[in-house]
Length: 384
Image (cartoon, rainbow, N blue to C red; front, side, top):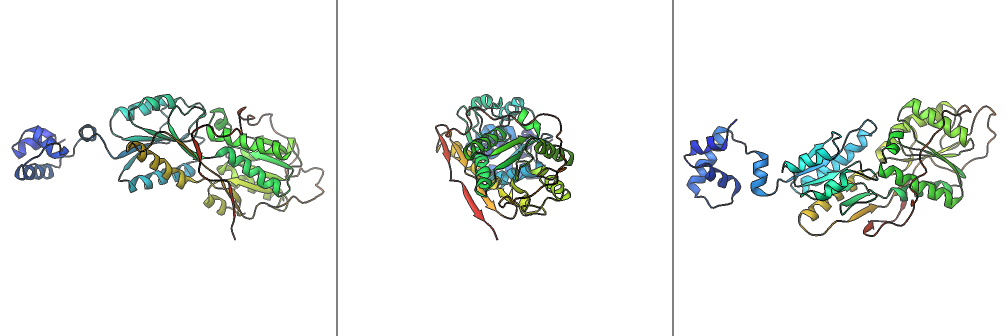
């Protein structure tokens, strides 16, 4: 590997002169600069990124921490990644993507290497052990997610509590009185993932406000997992007329099971999904959805980081209000006389093992904490 000393010998100058040419920290004569640059080109020298960072005090590189765990929906995560990369390029920054689940060690390793100017951290837990470490780092950070205690770290996310509330409200306004939640995989709740807890809190608050019967269960993102989840719903709420599906990976299985059981959407059961619009439009039924605004969230995260790097403002939290799009999967409940061997959802009666999702944090539905900015109000739109 070519070193700075090799370049200096070839150009007939000292290594410090080569360093000054690279960093621009001292004035070098045009003739000397030309000799150094010719030697760099001839030898194929590439400055070490860490040394260059120390010299310039910035790298124009952002770290994006997006652990790809087994329960993660990779296509949805990659929408956020694409958005961050696109926004970063508009600020002349590159992105270092970190997908290994390293916890706090990964953050300290990357920050200590001096290879990045700032960090964006995804998959945030309600009590995330990475937050105290981020607050001590030299580089600023933005969380895509909202922990219970941000500790002065900037956050941006969908307002998941408002999203859960809006989904139930929409079904209640259609006249539904019995609503079931098909939630994320059990491990998402077990890990204390912030978005899942906040969504469940909003769902529970809306059910109480509108006086609905409800049940909520975690769902493994497989056909068997969806079938088991619906069996549990049938056992506990056999007259359910609407499903809220907060599990993108299970959507196809849920619709397939309903179809196989002869249950028409929305004539027999309404389905409202929390997923990106392109997912909703790629299924056999055009689903009514609350969109996951990956493009907007990723762009805002980068914008907030740039403001922090430029010293234009301190830490802040920005929550995006949900946008609900009405399509073909929701309608009013219709009176029916079910087969005595079938439940309202069309699955054989008799549930699986006990268990569901937790009831949500005790302060669910409370107003946003001080410093939280709700970017817009909940919106419903219709599509042709």
